[in-house]
Length: 419
Length: 140
Image 1 (cartoon, chains in turn blue, cyan):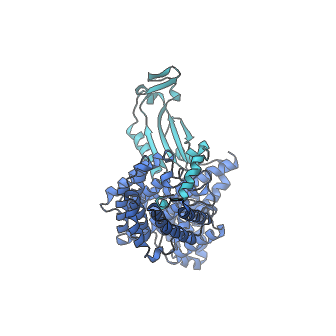
Image 2: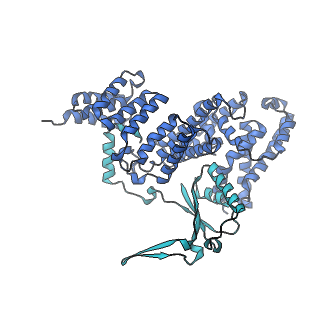
Image 3: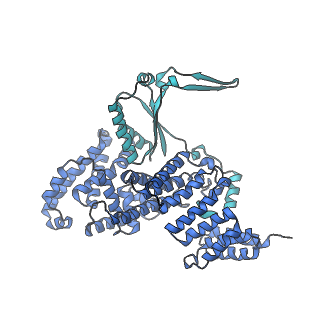
């Protein structure tokens, strides 16, 4: 085995084992930062030894043995440095005994790790970085490239996050009762943020960011395995799988976006669609009332079920946006509903909805509101008003290409020869 | 990326010998691990080729040939489809499969972009139309 081959294999083993390793170690040492360092030490040992000795037959157990050995060394040092001892807040002997216990299969460890990484004491960006690091097995460099930020920034975020968790003595546990729902919301938000960062990226490293979508979906599936009775976990998973099924159809070879209705549906990934539809069914069977992710997944499912754009069930989509507006009200949801209404019942029916939104301060600087309004007006033949809206939209967008298109659109509606 | 893991048939699978409870349990445990890690997309076992059929297309037409087929080693007895980051990850997973005497093959599944489809005028046109539409909230 060459060194490169060995490193690729070690990468693969790391991806499979790292989260479980860190989770089990955290349970033993009660400090996620220390657990991760110990796991990293084991990884370094593997990188040193496996190219020569070959990959052991049970690589997970091998890594765990090394990490535990390092943990015991660590606590020996700690015993000599009492200050550090207090920081950890653990009795050294108890810690040593805990480490010497064999880690039996405790699947909850992974769930505990997810809840710790997504703990509300951390800022959102820190939760994202820590989740990818601890659960996705991504390196600092990979996270930095995925989010187009310097590696040092990510490294610092992770260090600070781990310090915050230790200082605030965040317990390594799965919350119960009312707290569970709230904390689960934070976990789902982080996973969806990761997904969206990969999904809505049109700039940056093209190869890296679809991988980010894949990482988020994998996290979603892991979560679904760990929390099989939580409907919104399946709702989010369904939403991500249905959206991801379109990844290959939604950009041109040049990486320019293609609107959903113009996409070549033959390029949609049927296997992911089937998975997404199954997850949606599961979500709906678990709860009589759909949560926001499940409703969004149901909307995505309407598109997935339509063989051609013209077959889209717009009436159902309108109803689902109405439902979404009830469970997660927002002006953007209303705007989406208006667009669906225009598809279902025509521009005249949609215009009053959009006009009503013009009062919303949240959308005062939102160029899509003007774009949608301009489009509806143009369809209704009110070209002069449409021109004004397109120009207003052009003045609000920060994207130069989009501005050009909107200005061209304004010119086109006003200059269109009509006689 | 997706990989298909092809499980080669053996004399036993071709003879329709069903797995023992122990084997099924071990395989179930392995599959559960794949599911928990979020990498399993599909997994199925196949009936022996005696229940299968082959279609052969030629200029003269299509002929239908009933199984069983010879060359046991070239036949399949089952498959997995895994969603993993690399071929090495697929290999590492399959090293953990509870096989004792078997042979498998791991093949990457083609993604549409692997075919190197051209950026056609139709696609360019679609892009232009896209820029003139406002329904972009419906997904990009």
